[in-house]
Image (cartoon, rainbow, N blue to C red; front, side, top):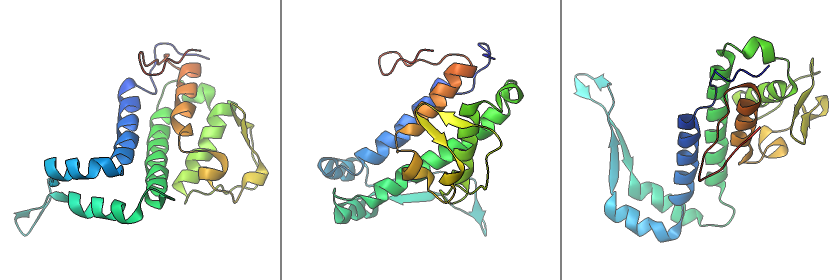
Amino acid sequence: MVNNNEEFLTIEHFDIYLELTFSMMCVRHPNLHNPILKEIPGVTVASSCAVQGKKQDINIPTKGIIDGFKKEGLTDVQSLKQGFYHVNSMFLISMWAILTETQNFNNISREPEIQFYRHVRNGCAHGNMFNFTKLRYPAKWRNKEIVAANSGQSVFPDVLKDGDPIFLLVDINNKFFKNLSVPGFIEFSN
């Protein structure tokens, strides 16, 4: 069942996920606000779009974003929770599309971990809610199991916590695809 030659989760996927989550947390830290504002008053991201011949780029106003974080403070940080939900959802949905295109997918599609991931992906794509009446195949990952009683629950935080998605993907990758380890940071093994 393992295909040691095929990749699913690459080091590049892993790195971008860490960069996104780390960046979200850092930009909210009060001790970093002034240095960020001093060094990066604004950011422009180039676009290929134009309206009536005038080029449009994305302009990110650093001050406006940081002012929002200052107002929110560090307790009960709702925007960080929402940020994690959206990054995790986008990451899981995107990685599902990559998984389904692997040569090995048809061989593993009914495996409990893949079924667990399938239900998580569907919940992420449909407003963070599980919505099913019965499960055709077991859906299990580590100590978690999705059952009919989960229908109507949220993916985050009812079943998964913010840090779970990367472990879910690494576990699936290392069980069914070429092993991924991250020396010096986290080392994963079968």
